[in-house]
Image (cartoon, rainbow, N blue to C red; front, side):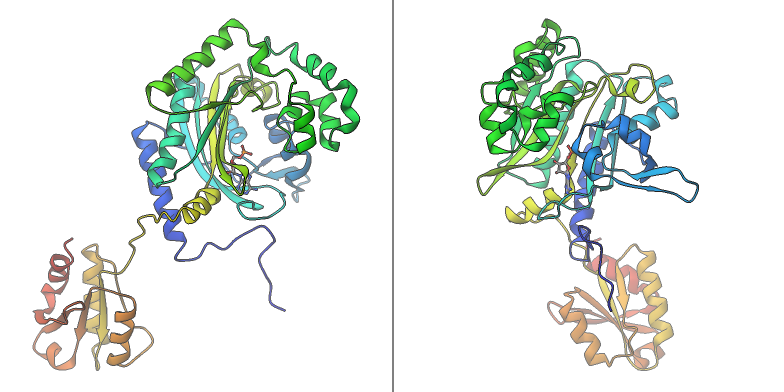
Length: 420
Ligand code: AMP
């Protein structure tokens, strides 16, 4: 029996990998412009990191982690998100001793035991950006601007930015109790998850996707009702800075991140699909995270964008990325000239040209047909007679025009003709 891939994973094939490369190029370029540097952390970490760094009462930790014991009996988890590992790396590598803030980005696979469907996988990829060691609202605004700019540069349209402030632990002290009181009469009507959340993580009831929970919670108090003066000022400043840059946002008081270490700004970038809203990315401030995972208190803000969702949206919006990856030249071998073809091919590649040749021993006619099919603009033909005279034929495929070129000049000629 043939073995298939694991449910919720995907093979990214040629034709699509070029789109990924284009997306990654935009990512590297934008991060360079905004002065973020790449960090690469391991794919797996001690489970404890995520228990503390993502939070034991989150869906990710409660239901979705790929956790196993390794052969040494250690509990290991495949990373379900990027922030906790970046925070660990910041502390472990004493990046706090460098001038602050530290601006980092990373991209790579994440693993969640989610229910697979379009745009939801068990191995998916995120683009993560974090500013560590900056408290001011300017960092929050920059992160949001970067996220929106990235999506705009790729050509995505009709996205909505939702933003909220969840306050600081001080101004949030009263909210859990207020929420418990508000929901007390109707706990029985909430969904199973929310019944547990009411005790353990009541803020999360506010952003439950269940329609009934949303209805019941329509008039519930939100973090925005409880912000202290400093948090109100911070939120206003973030919005002002977005406004200056012409970035529209919707204040959504129901957008929460339930854990204590999330502070102030929370945001999501949404698209609407068959009436329902879906997130392409989101993030916020997590001033309490470093302490939660054993470090000193260091303010930080970041976001993650799901790259599969970006691609899905690009397809649906009919946006094509610049994926020109075609060959510049194909070397067609005629007669007994394989060694010459190999040499010319090497010359072409040394010139930085994308080139290939036949390895299947096909006839010249079949090779030309293949070259036509791949839409390669130039074909170099190595024939025995020409080789004896020290030349090869360079053919422009669009016009059919052919010229004989001295063998040692072929690469140079192809480069000129390709406009490189
Ligand atoms: P989160 O870390 O949950 O805030 O997710 C950030 C972004 O990652 C989301 O907005 C999605 O675009 C993407 N994402 C999260 N979970 C999945 C998944 N299971 N499959 C694909 N993309 C995901």
